[in-house]
Length: 335
Image 1 (cartoon, rainbow, N blue to C red):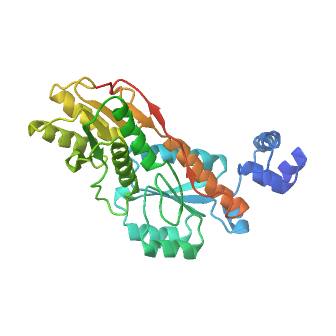
Image 2: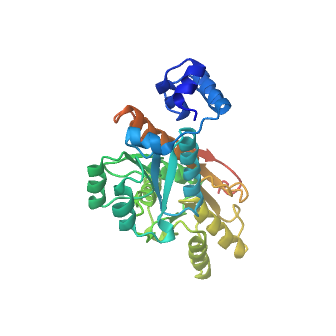
Image 3: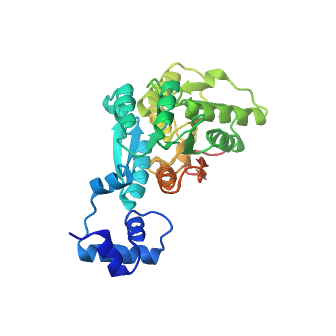
């Protein structure tokens, strides 16, 4: 059976260099990495994960906890995480809370029994008990998609994003701006920092422009197309005064708003301008002006931080804030 020593002899490097190259770890040149992989393929090398685990005390897997795999943002983050782990010959052990997994079961019976060497959570907050348990295990942990007090995170500046989206509408002359917020999300354990940060940015932009914040113009859309559509539909049918613009805290809520407006023969952007956040894969089809964030890149960055810590020790990389970019399309126009 071919081992890493055979590959090392064929390439003329050490066995440790071969091991690092095959797992996609740093401090190996691109030329050496390619030579090692070519030799491994030629010799028919098949790695033994169980043997590696016995030697290193590791599972060569990362535990990933996700609220749902059905939503676009989460699935894009998972794609980014998987791309990094596959390159490093790590597995992803997925815990999908949206499938009815009991949260306590995931933490107490799975994560804390070392199903993986580290924990990556998407948009979740942790209770004090969960934080204490994770700390006791010593598992490197990171949260992607939101900031969590006391834990490393990868995401965007939610306040700045909310401010930028609202400012775009103000710059176009809009003064009556409704905010569809993700607030009202009832699933236990989801971090409220995302909707709260975007509301804070919305308020700040209005106040900076000398505009009063009308609390009745903050409507809970729950990050849902259906809920947001129903909220805007109810506003229109009530005969209440329509805003001239809507800032939706996610593209999916913006889609719901656009569908409701069009259902009542209101034109976007002639009657109401709409802006979202995400640059969802359907945003261009809706001609939606939005702030583009990159959930795939967030997943990549989170996975790399964990792998770096597993190979080089803690403290090299901390939290990362990634940029957003305004994507002007046809759903907003000057008032």
